Length: 117
Length: 109
Image 1 (cartoon, chains in turn red, green):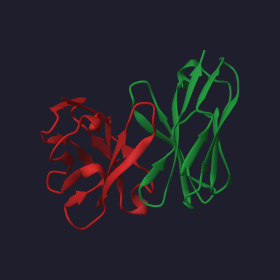
Image 2 (cartoon, rainbow over the protein chains, first blue to last red):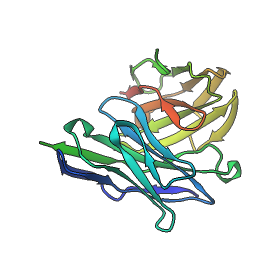
Image 3 (cartoon, one colour):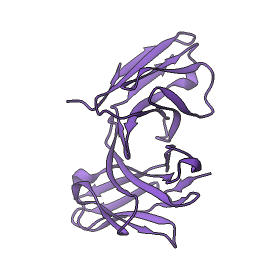
Image 4 (spheres, rainbow over the protein chains, first blue to last red):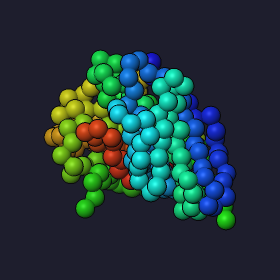
């Protein structure tokens, strides 16, 4: 069974500082990894994904994530946080093989990011 | 243009009633999903359809029945609503990454 762990319920960071939101995963075979953001009373918005290739993936709004196969991690990062980045962030994983879970995407429990002035 | 739309946005109803939530996507995707997000923001997949065929059916009460009249639509019908059904329900569609609708906040009283 595939799973995602987001160990921090909340991350607080000052505006202008770098931010990291942690994610580790478990899946059979090669993973497809995703980050989504949810603003209050809104649906989830896609930020970035890792399918194959470079371990460092760049996405929307200046976010990036680093795939680390040996540590089974896919941490979300941004060099300089903005107050407007404050939101709920979800990491998600699915198996690359259709026999390993098909299109089923498993989400982490979410990490609330709070960026303060 | 809205990519994935859901109606209604809010739904307040009494226990025992039957209600439906509609979802439409104009992205040309073959796969659509229904998710439930509870009060703690946990997001759990309920169903997935690929080209009108059910491919994922998680452990969901039989009172929940998805219907896909065509690959651009995936509706969710809920019979005999219970208090525990109160949640936000999200529709999504995908080719690779998933695109989510704005959600339907269901409140059962």
